[in-house]
Length: 227
Image (cartoon, rainbow, N blue to C red; front, side):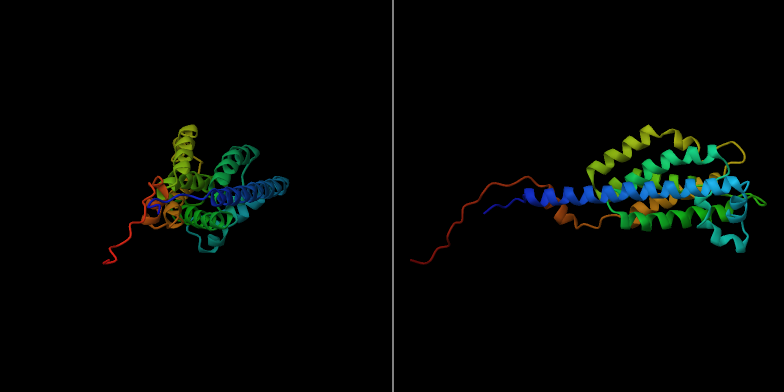
């Protein structure tokens, strides 16, 4: 009888197929998101960015609270949306490839966290809009997800992304005026918090058994039958 734990090749193949299916969904979700924000940008540009002014976040204006849900879809210039689109797609896909349903809940948390934070702390008489708070939320999430989930591949992905996009930390709280860094900071915090809230809750004993190498086969020794 084997006292070790061994993963069945069929089960491993099914896991890989599940992840691949979720990755396909994640790809199309992010493509769809980019199509939406670029379509909105065209309309916004044609209206001289009235949409951003009307549906952006106005700090400490109670009537502006619903705008925390519309602000991530709005930008103030072509350069603004171009700067957000690349990191949004990369970080969003990496945040979503293990499960789109979890990703959508994470996105809601980040949107609310970054929006509320900006609403409370941005400069008065200003209007905030843009997807950068969401970008930083996804960034924070993929950095810590592997640690909370105890997935080695996600730990590696988090380290690689942190190193490749280290410049993102320089604009987390930028010195340049006119940039709504508050949404950056609170989005990042919400993403890290999401890594803990939406972590895989696998029993430690099961993890230890799954990671243990196959043990030797121990022969069955009959008990003394009293003969």
